[in-house]
Image 1 (tube, rainbow, N blue to C red):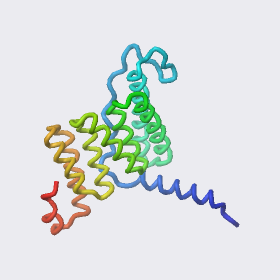
Image 2 (cartoon, rainbow, N blue to C red):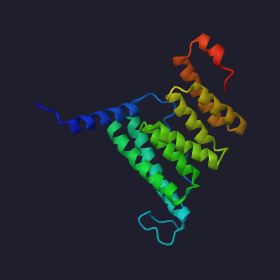
Image 3 (cartoon, rainbow, N blue to C red):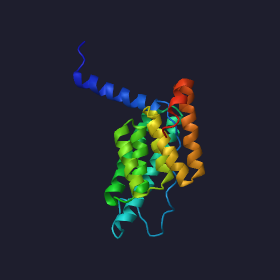
Amino acid sequence: MRIHPRATALALVALCLSASLARADYGSRPPAPPRPESASSTSPSNESGLTPRQQADQWYRDAYKDVEKGTKELSAGKTESAEKKFRRALERSRRATELDSTHHEAWNLVGFTSRKLGDYPSAFAAYNVAIRLKPDYAQAREYYGEGLLETGDLAGARRQLAALEKIGDEAMTAELRTAIAKYEGAHVTPADSSGSRGGK
C-alpha cells in the first residue's frame, strides 16, 4: 500500500507537537489570572463601544480560560486536547496584542502558549516584548528562564534569575531557582558546575 506524502508529513507534524507537549518542562502552571472584568465589558464577538484596550482585555481573558483548560488536560495526559486549547489560546492572545501592542500580559501569554506548542523562537520573542514593555515583569522573566532551560540554555536561565533577584519578587525567584536546581541535578556534573556558576 502506498502512503501519500502529505499524510506522512501531517503525521510527523502531529508527532512532533505531541512530543513537545509531553516534554518535561520546568513550569506547568498557567500565568497569573487576568484582572477582574469591568462592568462595561462584553464578549469579543460584540466589541462595539469598547476601546482597543478593553477589547484586548477580553481576548486575553478568553485566552487565559483556554490555557487553564489546556494545562489541566495536559496534566491528565490528554495531549491532543491540550494542544487544541493552547492553539486557541495562542490565537486569542495574539489577537489581544494586535488590538493593543502594549498589553504585556497578552505578550506573556503568547510566550507561554508558543512554548507549550514547542515553538521556542516565537515564545522567546514574545517574552522579550513583554519584558521590554515592563522590565520588572517578574512572571515573564521566570517563564523565559524556564523556556531557556527547556532548550538547554542554563546560562540564559541564570541571567533571568539574576534579573529576578534584582526585581525582588521572591515567589518568582524561588520558582526559577528551583527549576535551575532541577535542571542542574539532571544535566550538570560537579566539574561542570564548578566552572560555570560565575556566568549568571
